Length: 202
Image (cartoon, rainbow, N blue to C red; front, top):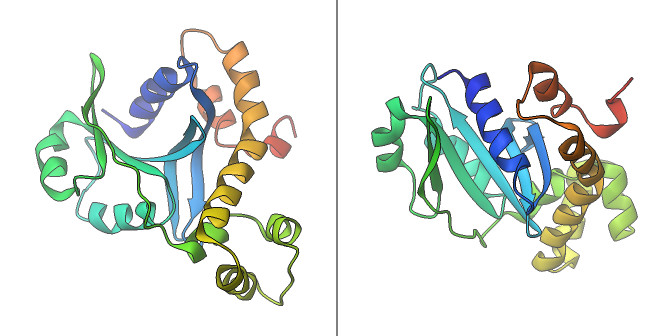
């Protein structure tokens, strides 16, 4: 299956769940070097999903997942059945796996919560103005601000700040989308779920 088809199928599954408070596509993180194919919030936890379609290579998957585990509470790989055997071999036990076929999506392995996240990577995933406001700090560069916060704040507070930012930024958009979408995720829907709320309707 193509990445777009997997994304549409999995998004439909997430949007049908009452526990999904946020869903967003192509979230940039890890200092702009990565983009999570899908992120969602369930029960206050941020979940990152990496998609591997039938046309994707998986030789970089280990490095990609290492970045994911530095930020998200739970991490999953959603892969075409073509890759399922290889993905099961190379992904750590704490990473969950979904297999995607034309018949639907099936969870192969449940993810475990990741607690050894990286504070700097987590802070970098929050915009600079939000960091200044939440932690009442200043600095010449974002990296300087991130290090200053990391050295003075509890790790739990840093993680909670990221969760609160994502929920505040995207929950209203997701709630509106859930109330409006039909039984099919269209290409326009995929595009809309890749836009920040302030860019919708622009």
